[in-house]
Length: 289
Figure 1 (cartoon, helix red, strand yellow):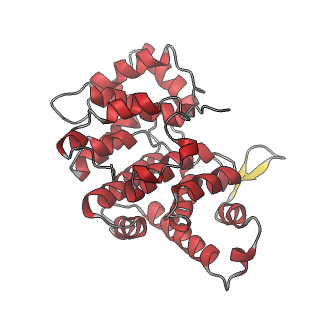
Figure 2 (cartoon, rainbow, N blue to C red; figure 1 turned 135 degrees about the vertical axis):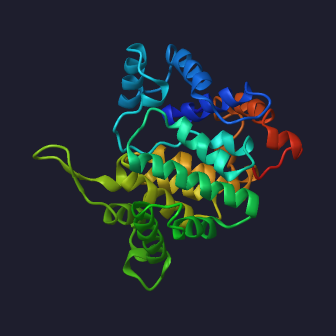
């Protein structure tokens, strides 16, 4: 394909960005405003509709409270990339991450969303490197659960192993594939279909998998994107995290021409929305956001 669409993960991020562009003056996301916008967009949703989205729509139709629409899926959920250009305070961005995850109630999925919100905020506003921000957030037990801390440790150790020329993993032809698989437990999808959860959508695989690619390819968004796609599995879930973190770190100039203007179908639409974000307006178009 010459022009690429974004899938449900990308379209959810666009949906949240569209909503933020309508909220002025800037304030925290309110579900009473976001959910009706989401419900309307679902009428013409072009992407795959996940089970949690379908369930949330069903619950909404039954009159469920807006803060009780979430299901128990542990799939990673990251829908707030545009909010980094809207909220200047870390806790406001964290709140946006949680509000945008309203279709998910499962603890680890929401913890993952919050973790990366804190990481990207510190990269942008304190100029930390991705590794510095990841380690700093994970080290604070007030901010990161034991689950997140374990997954971060696992990812950093595996990335270091893959980058160490003295370790066998670094010399493997499919080192990234082996790395993600080795970090995973078996996930029973039936009596005869055990798979490795590291490539699938659960947060326990997506979170360390995304960190692995961010650390190993932190100087090249292109290389990170290609390597992530080549591993397969739920590469889209990892991709939105990788793109947000490395985009914040490397800037818009790091987007390769093959993924830039004229290639992504929503490039112009998203660029126009980003131009309306408060932080980009105030700072005159900061390419780091």
